[in-house]
Image (cartoon, rainbow over all chains, first blue to last red; front, top):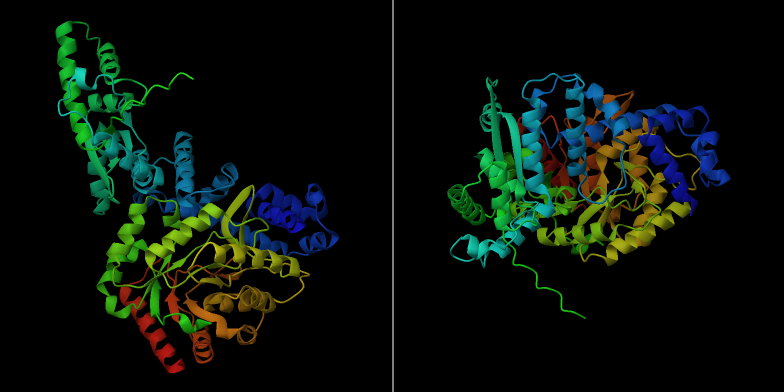
Length: 296
Length: 274
């Protein structure tokens, strides 16, 4: 059905500045690759070029605004003329085929774009990276369906944990940080920063490396946010579901160059306490091992 | 066809920044229209929280991505999720737009105009049939704002809308602000346009504000209702069995008292029109 071809041309005219320019210059040539009827081509050639161009500008702003909605505090930091980057944004990150939440997709893309602008020196805004990263993590953990499913799966897995968290009891289990958990490293005390911005205050903070845990509790639409230390961050980071608990502890021991038996035992004790706490908080899940496949 | 649907009165498009104001002004807001897309692929707790926290308000659903005008099948997963969501809302109806937003390889995430041809109408009818089969909740189609016509069609916009509504046997969400904006941008009489529609199928109305930019009036949902929109509302209220009116305000929110005043004025008009 060639109406689809016509719609393909139209969507490209609306979203690609390069194609739009070539279409407005010579519609017939620009549409050469499309299987259009003579009538469809006649209609496209008769489109009001100025109005079509204006509509493309409106679409550009709509995309930009949709992405910004996930970053309310970040918006308060951005310069008034930030929208001058909208054209570059839609050019470098054209829309794609999609299923799934448009706002999440645009927010993820905008985050990458703003970081790129900051690296290029186009945006020199204090605290911008930290605030935007905070809001991105909050949005990701709080909104995504995968996060909700992961939180539920974690809760189910932890329902049958042994009462004693010893290496013998859980050493073989493979702890898993799921989609309902994010950890972030920030250059400032980001919780204080967010608190000040939320109150409408101008932040005044010194650089201070801070680690933050974002996690979703089953059935709760909110996100729990808490400061953690580097050790906890490292431990959570190793819980990718492939390493057994004992392997995680051994890996941490190696990173800290803990070689003595006493040192290893002390580290193990601390890690197990932390694993217990993280399991109780539904941050780390301990899924039961899958049964081995029967020989055929 | 509207007879079986409840009369919901005059309400407000639900927007998260207005949540507390909405709860604190219940007596002025008869029902809420929820844009379904942010909830369709999100954690289910979000929709659960919305339903729980707005208890007491009837909710209707309003989508933006069904893309019934696209020459491709309706996204079955999106339809199923939307149908489940509006059922969770207990919505007496839900709506989307007579437009297209995507082709297989690209989603513009915005409502683009259709070419008013027989072939395009067949596509709409095919897709609306799929939507109706996929949900038990009555489905309405809304007229969109568009800034340029697609030339050399077979029929007028009013004829296209009429064909879609009557042949698909569905109701209409008549966006009065969109009619007003199109009448300015495209140069036609809004009253003649509305008279050409099957007004007995109008279930719900939208009112909103726009603003001038790029030499056109743009549907921004970010300002107060234009005086002409009020006049058109009076006309429609007297001529269509409307079951609900929603004020859409998405950005540049005013003091909530201004929104309440708009709702009050709409209620007065609807009362006179009945």
